[in-house]
Image (cartoon, rainbow, N blue to C red):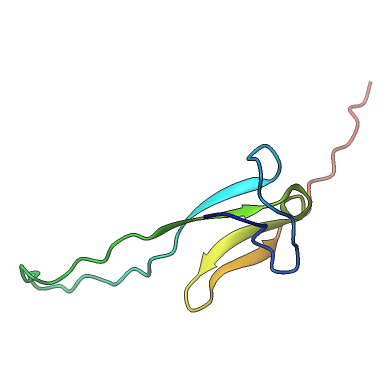
Length: 88
């Protein structure tokens, strides 16, 4: 259940989807399948989908991504391209 912004340094409570950005992230770790035939009772890796929310303030400059070994991490958004006025 979402209760607050995914940014650990932010305490903004989650009330509505209209403010901020909701992320659906597959947090399962993929295990490469063996080259040989799969055994009948060998478990297949399951997908684990989790939801995270960044408030409007945090989502303006950050995004979330999944990194093996670290889990879900915040990364800065790339700078917006500079738009130049069209010449008349």
